[in-house]
Image (cartoon, rainbow, N blue to C red):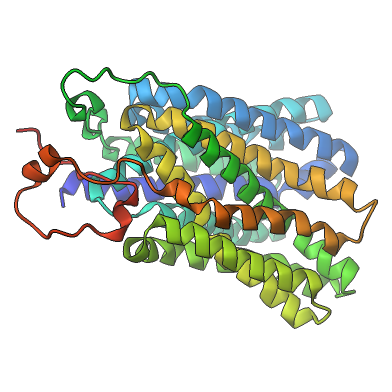
Amino acid sequence: MERSLRTGRLVTTAYFALNGFVLGMWVVHIPAVERHVGITHAVLGWLLLLLGAGAFVGMRITGPLTDRWGARTVVPLSAALCSAAVILPGLAVDAWTLGAALALLGLGNGCLDVSMNAHAIQVERGYGRPVMSAFHATFSIGGVLAALLGARTLSWGWSPAVTLGSVAALGIAVAALTARGLLPAEHTPAPAAEAPAGVTKPAHRPSRRIWALGALALMLMLCEGVANDWSTLHLRDVLNASAAVAALAYGAFSTAMTIGRLLADRVAMRFGPVAILRYGAALAAVGLTTATFSTWIPLALAGWAVFGAGLSGCIPQLFSAAGHADPSAAGTNVSRVAGLGYLGMLAGPAVIGPLTHFMPLNLTFLLPLGFCVVAVCSARILRSPHAAPSRLQAEAAGPGPTTRPRYAEHPVPRCTPAP
Protein backbone atom coordinates (compact mmCIF):
# COMPACT_ATOMS: atom_id res chain seq x y z
CA MET A 1 0.00 0.00 0.00
CA GLU A 2 1.41 3.37 -1.00
CA ARG A 3 2.46 5.56 1.88
CA SER A 4 0.52 8.48 0.40
CA LEU A 5 -2.64 6.38 0.38
CA ARG A 6 -2.23 5.41 4.02
CA THR A 7 -1.61 9.07 4.88
CA GLY A 8 -4.69 10.06 2.91
CA ARG A 9 -6.79 7.62 4.91
CA LEU A 10 -5.44 8.94 8.21
CA VAL A 11 -6.05 12.55 7.21
CA THR A 12 -9.58 11.76 6.02
CA THR A 13 -10.27 10.18 9.40
CA ALA A 14 -9.08 13.42 11.03
CA TYR A 15 -11.49 15.51 8.94
CA PHE A 16 -14.47 13.29 9.78
CA ALA A 17 -13.61 13.47 13.47
CA LEU A 18 -13.16 17.24 13.20
CA ASN A 19 -16.57 17.65 11.56
CA GLY A 20 -18.27 15.62 14.29
CA PHE A 21 -16.36 17.51 16.96
CA VAL A 22 -17.27 20.96 15.60
CA LEU A 23 -20.97 20.14 15.24
CA GLY A 24 -21.02 18.41 18.62
CA MET A 25 -19.57 21.48 20.29
CA TRP A 26 -22.34 23.60 18.80
CA VAL A 27 -25.02 21.14 19.95
CA VAL A 28 -23.64 21.10 23.51
CA HIS A 29 -23.79 24.90 23.66
CA ILE A 30 -27.29 25.33 22.21
CA PRO A 31 -28.95 25.95 25.63
CA ALA A 32 -26.26 28.46 26.66
CA VAL A 33 -26.49 30.33 23.36
CA GLU A 34 -30.29 30.34 23.58
CA ARG A 35 -30.15 31.94 27.03
CA HIS A 36 -27.49 34.45 25.99
CA VAL A 37 -29.43 35.61 22.93
CA GLY A 38 -32.74 35.62 24.83
CA ILE A 39 -34.97 33.67 22.44
CA THR A 40 -37.67 31.08 22.99
CA HIS A 41 -37.58 27.42 22.03
CA ALA A 42 -39.98 28.15 19.17
CA VAL A 43 -37.74 30.83 17.70
CA LEU A 44 -34.72 28.57 18.08
CA GLY A 45 -36.55 25.84 16.19
CA TRP A 46 -37.13 28.16 13.24
CA LEU A 47 -33.53 29.37 13.31
CA LEU A 48 -32.25 25.80 13.23
CA LEU A 49 -33.95 25.45 9.85
CA LEU A 50 -31.43 28.00 8.58
CA LEU A 51 -28.67 25.63 9.66
CA GLY A 52 -30.20 22.90 7.52
CA ALA A 53 -30.82 25.25 4.59
CA GLY A 54 -27.22 26.45 4.68
CA ALA A 55 -25.98 22.85 4.73
CA PHE A 56 -28.12 21.94 1.74
CA VAL A 57 -26.82 24.90 -0.27
CA GLY A 58 -23.23 24.06 0.70
CA MET A 59 -23.68 20.47 -0.46
CA ARG A 60 -25.08 21.52 -3.81
CA ILE A 61 -22.26 23.99 -4.42
CA THR A 62 -19.35 21.87 -3.25
CA GLY A 63 -20.00 18.68 -5.22
CA PRO A 64 -19.18 20.14 -8.66
CA LEU A 65 -16.33 22.23 -7.20
CA THR A 66 -14.76 19.09 -5.75
CA ASP A 67 -14.92 17.37 -9.13
CA ARG A 68 -13.36 20.39 -10.84
CA TRP A 69 -10.63 21.38 -8.36
CA GLY A 70 -10.09 18.13 -6.48
CA ALA A 71 -10.75 17.24 -2.86
CA ARG A 72 -7.20 18.21 -1.90
CA THR A 73 -8.14 21.85 -2.53
CA VAL A 74 -11.77 21.89 -1.42
CA VAL A 75 -11.60 19.82 1.80
CA PRO A 76 -9.16 22.09 3.72
CA LEU A 77 -11.03 25.23 2.64
CA SER A 78 -14.34 23.68 3.69
CA ALA A 79 -12.89 22.55 7.03
CA ALA A 80 -11.53 26.04 7.68
CA LEU A 81 -14.91 27.60 6.80
CA CYS A 82 -16.85 25.20 9.01
CA SER A 83 -14.42 25.66 11.91
CA ALA A 84 -14.35 29.45 11.63
CA ALA A 85 -18.15 29.63 11.46
CA VAL A 86 -18.67 27.70 14.72
CA ILE A 87 -17.61 30.73 16.77
CA LEU A 88 -20.32 32.92 15.22
CA PRO A 89 -23.27 31.56 17.28
CA GLY A 90 -21.25 32.29 20.43
CA LEU A 91 -20.90 35.93 19.31
CA ALA A 92 -24.58 36.41 18.36
CA VAL A 93 -26.50 39.08 20.27
CA ASP A 94 -30.03 38.64 18.91
CA ALA A 95 -32.15 36.35 16.76
CA TRP A 96 -31.05 37.99 13.51
CA THR A 97 -27.35 37.59 14.12
CA LEU A 98 -27.86 34.05 15.39
CA GLY A 99 -29.81 33.16 12.24
CA ALA A 100 -27.02 34.50 10.04
CA ALA A 101 -24.44 32.64 12.12
CA LEU A 102 -26.32 29.34 11.83
CA ALA A 103 -26.74 29.77 8.07
CA LEU A 104 -22.96 30.21 7.69
CA LEU A 105 -22.25 27.28 10.00
CA GLY A 106 -24.61 25.12 7.97
CA LEU A 107 -22.95 26.26 4.75
CA GLY A 108 -19.52 25.28 6.06
CA ASN A 109 -20.83 21.96 7.34
CA GLY A 110 -22.43 21.12 3.99
CA CYS A 111 -19.23 21.98 2.13
CA LEU A 112 -17.11 19.83 4.43
CA ASP A 113 -19.60 16.96 4.46
CA VAL A 114 -19.60 16.49 0.68
CA SER A 115 -15.92 17.20 0.03
CA MET A 116 -14.61 14.86 2.75
CA ASN A 117 -16.97 12.10 1.62
CA ALA A 118 -15.74 12.56 -1.96
CA HIS A 119 -12.16 12.22 -0.74
CA ALA A 120 -13.15 9.18 1.36
CA ILE A 121 -14.43 7.54 -1.84
CA GLN A 122 -11.12 8.36 -3.51
CA VAL A 123 -9.29 6.65 -0.63
CA GLU A 124 -11.63 3.67 -0.78
CA ARG A 125 -10.98 3.36 -4.50
CA GLY A 126 -7.26 3.25 -3.81
CA TYR A 127 -7.60 0.58 -1.13
CA GLY A 128 -9.87 -1.56 -3.26
CA ARG A 129 -11.93 -2.55 -0.24
CA PRO A 130 -14.56 -0.93 2.02
CA VAL A 131 -13.35 1.79 4.37
CA MET A 132 -16.25 4.26 4.22
CA SER A 133 -18.12 3.10 7.33
CA ALA A 134 -15.08 3.59 9.54
CA PHE A 135 -14.89 7.22 8.46
CA HIS A 136 -18.51 7.76 9.45
CA ALA A 137 -17.81 6.08 12.78
CA THR A 138 -15.07 8.62 13.54
CA PHE A 139 -17.60 11.39 12.89
CA SER A 140 -19.71 9.93 15.70
CA ILE A 141 -16.66 9.58 17.93
CA GLY A 142 -15.86 13.25 17.34
CA GLY A 143 -19.34 14.12 18.55
CA VAL A 144 -18.88 12.06 21.70
CA LEU A 145 -15.58 13.83 22.45
CA ALA A 146 -17.32 17.17 21.94
CA ALA A 147 -20.04 16.23 24.41
CA LEU A 148 -17.48 15.26 27.05
CA LEU A 149 -15.22 18.28 26.55
CA GLY A 150 -18.13 20.69 26.19
CA ALA A 151 -19.65 19.48 29.43
CA ARG A 152 -16.32 20.06 31.15
CA THR A 153 -15.85 23.61 29.84
CA LEU A 154 -19.41 24.49 30.79
CA SER A 155 -18.76 23.23 34.31
CA TRP A 156 -15.71 25.50 34.42
CA GLY A 157 -17.92 28.46 33.54
CA TRP A 158 -16.41 29.16 30.12
CA SER A 159 -18.61 31.28 27.89
CA PRO A 160 -19.76 29.87 24.52
CA ALA A 161 -17.65 32.48 22.71
CA VAL A 162 -14.46 31.35 24.44
CA THR A 163 -15.05 27.63 23.96
CA LEU A 164 -16.30 27.87 20.39
CA GLY A 165 -13.49 30.27 19.55
CA SER A 166 -10.97 27.70 20.78
CA VAL A 167 -12.67 25.05 18.66
CA ALA A 168 -12.49 27.35 15.63
CA ALA A 169 -8.77 27.89 16.12
CA LEU A 170 -8.20 24.16 16.52
CA GLY A 171 -10.16 23.34 13.37
CA ILE A 172 -8.34 25.91 11.25
CA ALA A 173 -5.00 24.56 12.50
CA VAL A 174 -6.02 20.99 11.63
CA ALA A 175 -7.10 22.09 8.14
CA ALA A 176 -3.78 23.86 7.55
CA LEU A 177 -1.56 21.08 8.92
CA THR A 178 -3.26 18.13 7.21
CA ALA A 179 -3.97 19.58 3.77
CA ARG A 180 -0.79 18.15 2.22
CA GLY A 181 -1.76 14.65 3.29
CA LEU A 182 -4.84 14.60 1.05
CA LEU A 183 -4.63 12.67 -2.21
CA PRO A 184 -4.09 14.69 -5.39
CA ALA A 185 -6.85 14.63 -7.97
CA GLU A 186 -4.88 12.45 -10.38
CA HIS A 187 -5.26 9.49 -7.99
CA THR A 188 -8.77 9.13 -9.35
CA PRO A 189 -8.62 7.03 -12.52
CA ALA A 190 -9.76 8.99 -15.56
CA PRO A 191 -13.04 7.59 -16.92
CA ALA A 192 -11.94 8.32 -20.48
CA ALA A 193 -9.01 5.92 -20.08
CA GLU A 194 -11.33 3.14 -18.95
CA ALA A 195 -13.96 3.65 -21.62
CA PRO A 196 -13.69 1.55 -24.81
CA ALA A 197 -12.55 3.29 -27.97
CA GLY A 198 -15.31 5.17 -29.73
CA VAL A 199 -17.51 5.46 -26.64
CA THR A 200 -18.43 9.03 -25.78
CA LYS A 201 -17.90 10.10 -22.18
CA PRO A 202 -21.34 10.57 -20.57
CA ALA A 203 -22.45 13.93 -19.31
CA HIS A 204 -22.56 14.44 -15.55
CA ARG A 205 -26.31 14.27 -15.34
CA PRO A 206 -27.87 12.25 -12.56
CA SER A 207 -28.95 8.79 -13.66
CA ARG A 208 -32.01 7.01 -12.37
CA ARG A 209 -29.70 4.98 -10.15
CA ILE A 210 -28.33 8.12 -8.48
CA TRP A 211 -31.84 9.40 -7.83
CA ALA A 212 -32.80 5.99 -6.43
CA LEU A 213 -29.79 6.07 -4.10
CA GLY A 214 -30.81 9.59 -3.05
CA ALA A 215 -34.38 8.48 -2.34
CA LEU A 216 -33.10 5.62 -0.15
CA ALA A 217 -30.76 8.04 1.64
CA LEU A 218 -33.71 10.37 2.30
CA MET A 219 -35.78 7.54 3.79
CA LEU A 220 -33.02 6.02 5.91
CA MET A 221 -31.72 9.35 7.20
CA LEU A 222 -35.30 10.26 8.10
CA CYS A 223 -35.25 7.08 10.18
CA GLU A 224 -32.04 8.27 11.83
CA GLY A 225 -33.59 11.68 12.44
CA VAL A 226 -36.58 10.05 14.12
CA ALA A 227 -34.24 8.30 16.56
CA ASN A 228 -32.33 11.53 17.22
CA ASP A 229 -35.42 13.61 17.90
CA TRP A 230 -38.04 11.22 19.27
CA SER A 231 -36.40 8.22 20.97
CA THR A 232 -36.04 10.02 24.31
CA LEU A 233 -39.56 11.45 24.14
CA HIS A 234 -40.87 7.98 23.32
CA LEU A 235 -39.61 6.52 26.58
CA ARG A 236 -40.63 9.58 28.57
CA ASP A 237 -44.15 10.09 27.23
CA VAL A 238 -45.22 6.60 26.11
CA LEU A 239 -43.51 4.39 28.71
CA ASN A 240 -43.42 6.98 31.53
CA ALA A 241 -39.68 6.58 32.10
CA SER A 242 -37.77 9.10 34.17
CA ALA A 243 -35.76 11.79 32.38
CA ALA A 244 -32.48 10.03 33.16
CA VAL A 245 -33.69 6.66 31.89
CA ALA A 246 -35.32 8.21 28.82
CA ALA A 247 -31.99 9.77 27.83
CA LEU A 248 -30.57 6.24 27.58
CA ALA A 249 -32.70 5.61 24.49
CA TYR A 250 -30.68 7.97 22.32
CA GLY A 251 -27.50 6.83 24.03
CA ALA A 252 -28.25 3.20 23.16
CA PHE A 253 -29.06 4.12 19.58
CA SER A 254 -25.97 6.26 18.97
CA THR A 255 -23.58 3.86 20.72
CA ALA A 256 -24.84 0.90 18.69
CA MET A 257 -24.58 2.92 15.49
CA THR A 258 -20.98 3.91 16.21
CA ILE A 259 -19.95 0.33 17.01
CA GLY A 260 -21.79 -0.94 13.94
CA ARG A 261 -19.96 1.49 11.67
CA LEU A 262 -16.62 0.41 13.08
CA LEU A 263 -17.46 -3.17 12.11
CA ALA A 264 -19.42 -2.59 8.89
CA ASP A 265 -16.41 -2.36 6.55
CA ARG A 266 -15.26 -5.89 7.40
CA VAL A 267 -18.78 -7.20 6.96
CA ALA A 268 -19.10 -5.41 3.61
CA MET A 269 -15.78 -6.89 2.50
CA ARG A 270 -17.04 -10.37 3.27
CA PHE A 271 -20.67 -10.20 2.13
CA GLY A 272 -20.92 -7.12 -0.09
CA PRO A 273 -22.83 -3.82 0.13
CA VAL A 274 -26.14 -5.34 -1.00
CA ALA A 275 -26.16 -7.60 2.06
CA ILE A 276 -25.23 -4.68 4.33
CA LEU A 277 -28.22 -2.65 3.13
CA ARG A 278 -30.70 -5.55 2.93
CA TYR A 279 -29.98 -7.20 6.27
CA GLY A 280 -29.05 -3.96 8.01
CA ALA A 281 -32.41 -2.39 7.10
CA ALA A 282 -34.17 -5.62 8.11
CA LEU A 283 -32.40 -5.57 11.48
CA ALA A 284 -33.36 -1.91 11.89
CA ALA A 285 -36.99 -2.80 11.15
CA VAL A 286 -36.91 -5.49 13.83
CA GLY A 287 -35.39 -3.09 16.35
CA LEU A 288 -37.89 -0.31 15.63
CA THR A 289 -40.80 -2.74 15.79
CA THR A 290 -39.58 -3.89 19.20
CA ALA A 291 -39.26 -0.32 20.46
CA THR A 292 -42.65 0.67 19.03
CA PHE A 293 -44.75 -2.07 20.63
CA SER A 294 -42.77 -2.84 23.78
CA THR A 295 -44.31 -1.91 27.11
CA TRP A 296 -41.17 -2.88 29.05
CA ILE A 297 -38.52 -0.16 29.26
CA PRO A 298 -35.42 -2.43 29.04
CA LEU A 299 -36.83 -4.13 25.94
CA ALA A 300 -37.59 -0.73 24.36
CA LEU A 301 -33.99 0.37 25.02
CA ALA A 302 -32.76 -2.82 23.39
CA GLY A 303 -35.01 -2.07 20.42
CA TRP A 304 -33.47 1.38 19.93
CA ALA A 305 -29.99 -0.16 20.16
CA VAL A 306 -30.83 -2.77 17.52
CA PHE A 307 -32.34 -0.01 15.37
CA GLY A 308 -29.04 1.89 15.49
CA ALA A 309 -26.97 -1.21 14.78
CA GLY A 310 -29.09 -2.01 11.73
CA LEU A 311 -28.91 1.50 10.27
CA SER A 312 -25.20 1.91 10.98
CA GLY A 313 -23.80 0.56 7.72
CA CYS A 314 -26.58 1.59 5.32
CA ILE A 315 -25.85 5.26 4.64
CA PRO A 316 -22.07 4.78 4.07
CA GLN A 317 -22.89 2.15 1.43
CA LEU A 318 -25.23 4.56 -0.37
CA PHE A 319 -22.62 7.33 -0.38
CA SER A 320 -19.96 4.90 -1.57
CA ALA A 321 -22.12 3.58 -4.40
CA ALA A 322 -22.90 7.13 -5.54
CA GLY A 323 -19.22 8.09 -5.58
CA HIS A 324 -18.09 4.98 -7.43
CA ALA A 325 -20.84 5.24 -10.06
CA ASP A 326 -18.71 7.77 -11.99
CA PRO A 327 -15.25 8.60 -10.59
CA SER A 328 -15.07 11.85 -12.55
CA ALA A 329 -18.34 13.08 -10.98
CA ALA A 330 -17.94 11.57 -7.52
CA GLY A 331 -18.37 14.88 -5.69
CA THR A 332 -21.45 15.84 -7.69
CA ASN A 333 -23.14 12.48 -7.18
CA VAL A 334 -22.32 12.40 -3.48
CA SER A 335 -23.74 15.91 -3.11
CA ARG A 336 -27.01 14.77 -4.69
CA VAL A 337 -27.37 11.71 -2.47
CA ALA A 338 -26.16 13.50 0.67
CA GLY A 339 -28.40 16.49 -0.03
CA LEU A 340 -31.51 14.35 -0.29
CA GLY A 341 -30.43 12.41 2.78
CA TYR A 342 -30.00 15.62 4.74
CA LEU A 343 -33.51 16.69 3.76
CA GLY A 344 -34.71 13.40 5.19
CA MET A 345 -32.86 14.05 8.44
CA LEU A 346 -34.58 17.44 8.73
CA ALA A 347 -37.95 15.99 7.75
CA GLY A 348 -38.02 13.58 10.70
CA PRO A 349 -39.34 16.01 13.32
CA ALA A 350 -41.45 17.83 10.73
CA VAL A 351 -43.27 14.64 9.70
CA ILE A 352 -43.60 12.84 13.04
CA GLY A 353 -44.77 15.91 14.96
CA PRO A 354 -48.00 16.51 13.01
CA LEU A 355 -48.78 12.78 12.99
CA THR A 356 -48.92 12.80 16.81
CA HIS A 357 -52.14 14.83 16.53
CA PHE A 358 -53.85 11.78 14.99
CA MET A 359 -52.18 8.80 16.71
CA PRO A 360 -49.94 7.95 19.67
CA LEU A 361 -46.25 8.76 19.28
CA ASN A 362 -45.16 5.12 19.11
CA LEU A 363 -47.55 4.38 16.23
CA THR A 364 -46.03 7.19 14.15
CA PHE A 365 -42.88 5.05 14.03
CA LEU A 366 -44.69 2.82 11.55
CA LEU A 367 -43.68 5.35 8.87
CA PRO A 368 -39.90 4.92 9.31
CA LEU A 369 -40.55 1.21 9.77
CA GLY A 370 -42.10 1.17 6.31
CA PHE A 371 -39.05 3.00 4.92
CA CYS A 372 -36.80 0.27 6.35
CA VAL A 373 -38.91 -2.32 4.53
CA VAL A 374 -38.55 -0.35 1.28
CA ALA A 375 -34.77 -0.36 1.75
CA VAL A 376 -34.80 -4.15 2.24
CA CYS A 377 -36.72 -4.59 -1.01
CA SER A 378 -34.52 -2.10 -2.92
CA ALA A 379 -31.09 -3.27 -1.77
CA ARG A 380 -30.17 -4.60 -5.21
CA ILE A 381 -29.74 -1.00 -6.37
CA LEU A 382 -26.23 -1.24 -4.89
CA ARG A 383 -25.33 -3.98 -7.38
CA SER A 384 -23.55 -2.18 -10.19
CA PRO A 385 -24.71 -3.10 -13.71
CA HIS A 386 -21.02 -3.08 -14.70
CA ALA A 387 -19.71 -5.23 -11.88
CA ALA A 388 -17.99 -7.79 -14.12
CA PRO A 389 -14.47 -6.70 -15.06
CA SER A 390 -13.72 -6.22 -18.73
CA ARG A 391 -11.19 -8.35 -20.59
CA LEU A 392 -8.77 -5.42 -20.78
CA GLN A 393 -9.02 -4.87 -17.01
CA ALA A 394 -8.44 -8.58 -16.39
CA GLU A 395 -5.35 -8.55 -18.60
CA ALA A 396 -4.01 -5.41 -16.92
CA ALA A 397 -4.50 -7.01 -13.50
CA GLY A 398 -2.34 -9.97 -14.51
CA PRO A 399 -2.70 -13.55 -13.29
CA GLY A 400 -4.62 -14.05 -10.07
CA PRO A 401 -7.63 -15.74 -8.57
CA THR A 402 -10.55 -16.32 -10.89
CA THR A 403 -13.19 -15.29 -8.39
CA ARG A 404 -13.98 -11.76 -7.37
CA PRO A 405 -14.62 -10.73 -3.76
CA ARG A 406 -18.24 -10.17 -2.91
CA TYR A 407 -17.53 -6.45 -2.40
CA ALA A 408 -17.00 -6.03 -6.14
CA GLU A 409 -20.74 -5.58 -6.51
CA HIS A 410 -19.81 -1.95 -7.08
CA PRO A 411 -16.16 -2.24 -8.16
CA VAL A 412 -13.43 -0.18 -6.51
CA PRO A 413 -10.33 -0.30 -8.75
CA ARG A 414 -7.01 0.13 -6.99
CA CYS A 415 -4.85 3.14 -7.77
CA THR A 416 -2.00 1.72 -9.83
CA PRO A 417 0.60 3.74 -11.74
CA ALA A 418 -0.24 4.27 -15.38
CA PRO A 419 1.94 2.16 -17.71
